Length: 172
Image (cartoon, rainbow, N blue to C red; front, side, top):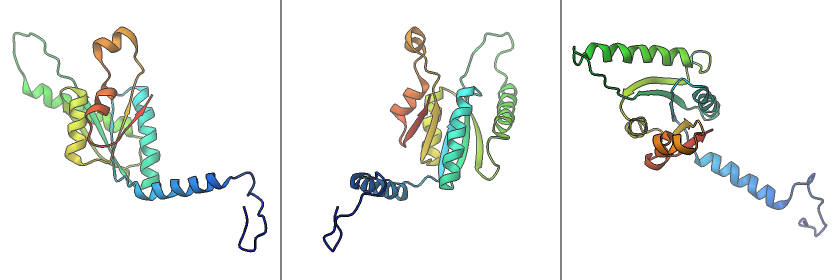
């Protein structure tokens, strides 16, 4: 490299010109990316705790808010009493409390926008919630299932990636 006087400059401690240009590109990309809202689906597993840790780090860096979502997949049992709507309400309230407890100590209160509990097919409810709330990023965990279990059950994370209208960060 030469300066305006034609003298050769010594490279800066092993940093190449290409790396310096790449660094500027990263800085420019960081200015373009704006995260205001992050959706974190939670199933109360250790994998969910890992994805929440990523979300907290990004939220602190970008000044974003975190929305936690738990989706209870509807399970039907034959009973002689039939449908009891009050049981669904109490399950939802129980999950909201459990979500708040899950976030306690992991997320500063000023970073937590809201906690949501929905019933339905997990990937569908996650993508619907993201679209309705206009989130900028979904951070979802995967348990890394392979083989027959993956074929039979599918991957919620994979389906979220396929159907989401915003970027998805998958944490293994």
